[in-house]
Length: 179
Image (cartoon, rainbow, N blue to C red):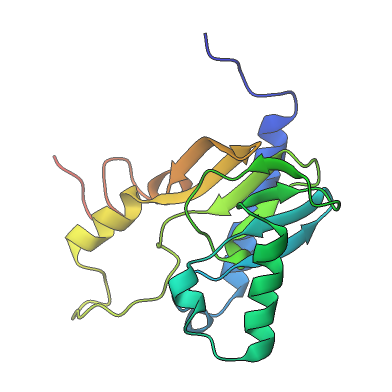
């Protein structure tokens, strides 16, 4: 038997889900390029959330201050995850890299919400109808949109399709579904 969510989990996760959606809606599309996977340490109410980036991408950075900042984080923290202010690892984050603006740690030091996948990245697709090609639309709707974590482990993920409220059942963003 799988244990159910902790008390208040549904309310917490519902509130956390609203944060990335609201923040993303307020960000202009042109300001959301594909980010390089760079190391960061994000202060939280429970400590410091660390995401170690791709060393090959970081090696391309030439600004000495930024290089020093990466080195400082990597020297203090060996893994991605949540650390106490003392530097002690609370839990390791078992997930692929996510940009700092796509990660939303809860104040309880246990839960975390992340924008998953790449659906939020602006792209250009050739089209006469201002719509994505049907295959791309289907792929993006099935892709993960948001993931919820507890102690660094994925608890639940929701695909983009589950977060849409105006898509008719059996269709793909307004395209007629099978008859």
